[in-house]
Image 1 (cartoon, one colour):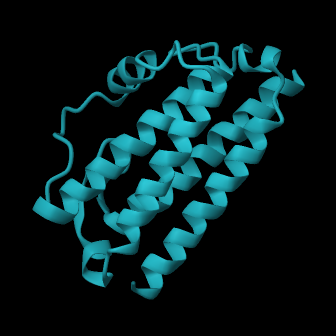
Image 2: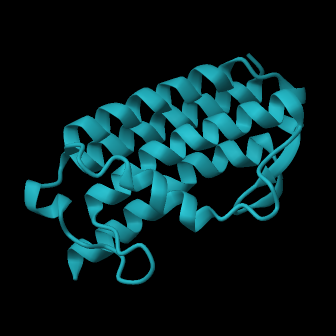
Length: 158
């Protein structure tokens, strides 16, 4: 494992553990609280469903970039994708969602641990970043969740 891969794996693991601790603190009532009022209008539970599908989707995207050098098409609609994929997990309980997220995160860590420097430098189209290196996409995977968790905290304080 390269030094960069090792660092990314460490950050992914730490961020996953922080996410688990954060969501474990929520009451059943809080899981149903709406966080966003525009666009998706997601509840906390729906945001966790988004974490699950985003982790899996980004893992598949990174693998595709490493293997083929291709990312998503230029016209990829990230909002429609997110809405559709997150809706597939709406009936899952918070415990089921957390379990799926942690499994997906562990799969991501295992994949990243196999990358060398050349893999991390490969570029492909990410739906939000545009053309980006694999390393930057992996960093976004843990930063993305941190952003949503800050927004959840703000919603809970309202």
